Length: 279
Figure (cartoon, rainbow, N blue to C red):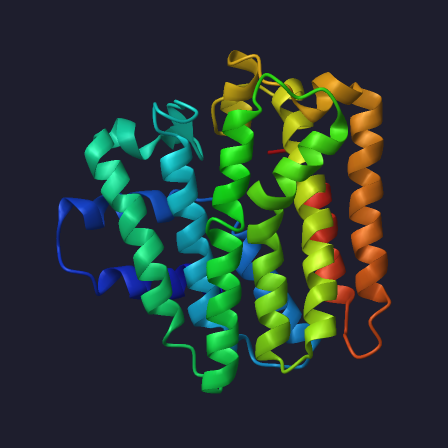
């Protein structure tokens, strides 16, 4: 996969250290690489070369991995299994895991700065990435999630959490792809809306799979169930959760198909694969 080669090259250039080993361990643990591939698909849909997005694709995957490392820590979800093998703090130790996450987050922005696009487009993309990953985006969502774990009583509260916790880092590659392809602010906002829908659908789907599959089948611990956390399934029921998931994915696909200057077939096929996933 293209993104794996880009990540390998970027991480190989770091000085040798235990932190580097932990960073590589976590990044190369597998994963679906959904976010970087969404960026590539948007570029292709606009007729741009994938190489234009390599730096930001790698940066987004580094940020995604950092968020998982920290999310798995005892102070957060306290998970032992991620992507079918021990979480970073179990394989190494908590201090190294924290540093590995810090390293991936900061190295992501150094990597993104090597984007070959026009400097104005690169700066716009960097701002989007920072907003989507930071205290206005994913970090805010994680905070909402921690504060409201037991107090959620309706679906709108879950929507608020997932708009930031999951949606932001799925919106970022769509938005950045549009920026690098030279699209205007209105189109970037429309891609943001699509990312929000995919993000919520993705989380509803995760909640469904947590109920249907074992930890071994999922490749990660089912900490939401263990911690008695309110989820889309526990709130809506399985049938309504499945319907909500499918409706959200379909709305996102319909919006993408409506874009007149975008060749949507490949991205739609990718989203369908996400919708059909079983882990």
